[in-house]
Length: 417
Image 1 (tube, rainbow, N blue to C red):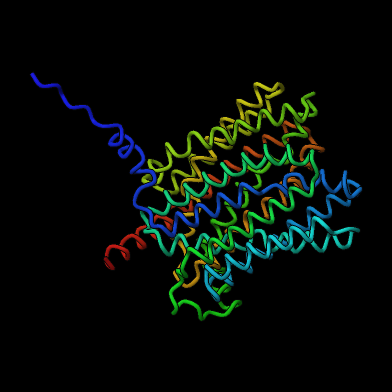
Image 2: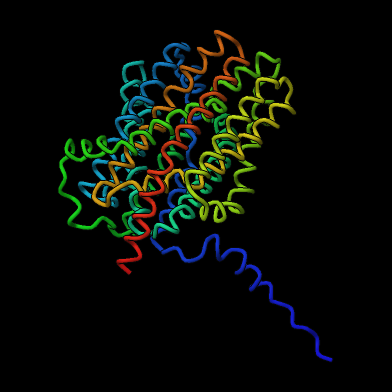
C-alpha cells in the first residue's frame, strides 16, 4: 500500500504567500524596498521635540513653533509633490524629494538659533512628504485596480515595520548623541532616492504631463467625491493621531509615565505587523466603502472605550481595538484615491489626499490638547468616537458614488485587455 504523498513545504508556502505577495511587478518591489529603507531611518521627527529642548535649549513654546512649522511645510509639500508628479514625472519627483530631504535634515541638525532652525524645519516639512503623491501615483500607474489594495496594504505594512524598528534604534542612538539620528535619517532618505533613480523607470504616460498646476488642481477640487472623501479622511486622521499625540498626556493624568505609554503604544505596531499581512488580501476583495466604514467604527469604539481606561492594561486593550480598525481601513484608503483619479491627475489627487494626512497631523495635537484641557480624557475620547462615527456615516452616503467610480475603472481595465 503506497503512502499518500505529503505536499512539500514549499507548496504550502506558495499557497500562503501567493495571494498576499504574488503577481506584483519588480518596479513595485523596488519601491517597497525603498520605502522600508526610508522608514527604517525615520528617527528625527519622533525625537525632534526632545532634541530641540535638550540640545538646542529651546523653550517648549519655541519647540512647538518649530514642529508646527514643519507640519505647515508638509501641507505645501504634498501639494507641490502632487503637481510635480504629474508635470515632471513620478521618478524625478521621488528622487528630488528624497535626496532633498536628506540635505534638509542635515541642515536642521546643524542649524543654530531659532530663526535658522525654523527655516530648516520648514524646508524639511516641505520635502519629507513631497514624495508620497508620486509614490501613490506610481503604484496606480503600474498595478491593476484589483491588485491596488493589496499593493497599498503591503506598503502600509513596510511603513509600520520600518517605523517600529526606527523607534527602538532611534531611542538607543539618541543616548549616544542626537546628531546620529539626523545622519541616519538623511542617509536613508538619500538611499531611497538613489534606488528610485537607479531601479525604477518613469511610469507616467508622456501624454499626461500637460495640465498646468492651477488648472490641474482646479479639476481636482471640482470633483466633489474626491473633496468629500478627503474631508472624511481628515476627520479620521485627526482621531487616529490622538494615539500618538494626546494619549501620553491623558495617561500621565492617570499616573502613568512615558515607559507605560511606550509599552501600550507598542501594541499598535506589533498588531499591525502580525495581522495586516494576514487580512489585507481578504479585505481588498470586499466593497471598499463598507471596509472603511467597518474600520472607522472599530476606531471609534476603541477611542470611546479609552474614556474608561485608567491602567496600563486597559489602555493597551483599547489600543488593540482601534488598531484593528486602523488595519481594516488602511486596506483600501489609498486604493479609493487611485480609483477616483484620472490617469493625468493621479499626482494631484494624491496631493489632496496627502493634505488630509498633513492636516490631520497638524490639527491633532492642537485640537486634542484643547479638548483634554477643557474636559479631560473622557471629553477627548468621546469626541473622537463621535467624529469617527460621523465620518463613517458620511462615507456611507458617499459609498454609491465611490462604488460607481470603482466599477468604471474595472470595466475600463477589462475593455483595454
